[in-house]
Image (cartoon, rainbow, N blue to C red):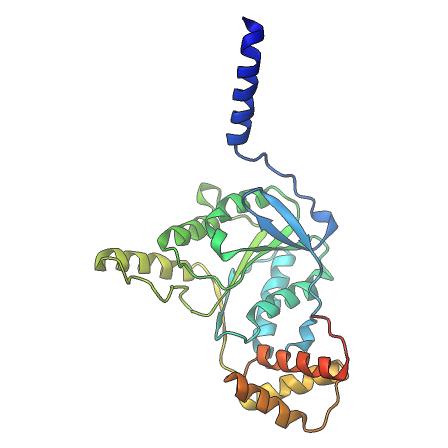
Length: 279
């Protein structure tokens, strides 16, 4: 009788094993400085160092200074604020966050950056609890954050930043980039009642208030755009006739002037000249 039960019990055990939540993964943060977090497995995947130097970002001097100052305070264990980098697309918000991290991390060996996907915001409270127990200090970065799925993600982010009864983890600094100052989706409230829409909007706006540091990135004017192009060209030794005219023509074709458009022009020029670039 026992022999007949063994195959059945084995299949039940296998099924329970598959249904069980994944075992916690012990992070190995000593192998890199940048990581991507996978909330489905709890794993932290190392990434190569961000190659663009902070000095290469032109036209955002005030933003660089303010963000680096806040990050340096965090690295030293001093009071600081979670940061929201907001403004028009292509102005260098994400690049600034990563380049600033690399600059500060040179002098803060226990500082790590963990990038999380904007669609996984609901997993942030669990992630923060995992990081709370670590000796390292973590800059958690969420690029292009908005609450397309409604108030559930907003509530999860508020919970992570406030930390519940335990309070927020002292070794975690959260930074988000967004094209919108209040993180609200463009489609907010299209298919919902007025009361529910107002409640969701209030929930989402209240998350913005949890960011003590707001850094705006306005549209780039023509002199700043050309300064960015010239700065990149000088840094990477790219020489061509009529650099300004060609850069303006490139921006006109794109219908925008921004740090991203300047970098895309430089990439095209470098390819034309047979030169390599770090990104």
